Length: 129
Image (cartoon, rainbow, N blue to C red):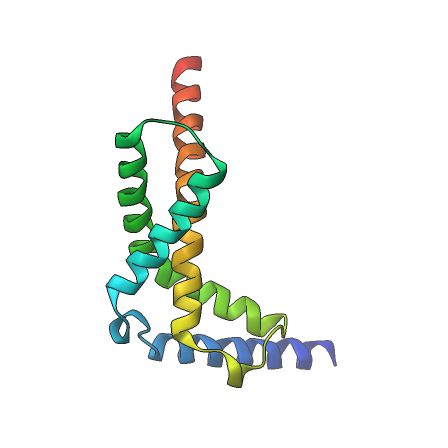
């Protein structure tokens, strides 16, 4: 019985991945909207993390926009899969554009923090050697 359930879950996962692959969310969406969502994400981040001069803050906006342009589509697919897997929202109520905007906002807000952590780790390892 357990193997039947696992096989059914595997088939459902494959069907979901085929469905996601058939949807080109960004192709039907505007990069300006993704960039604006990233700017708002960086703005919210800068409210809580107050450091640096004006030039550093401008560079954070640019980096947040680039991070969300390249990472929003991937993170929206992951978010879509997680929402369906945990049955948080019914499939009929998920809108790809809303997921993409949310993913761009989160990439703009948390993407810079992840990059800073990565650079800090690299520089710390470099100094240790």
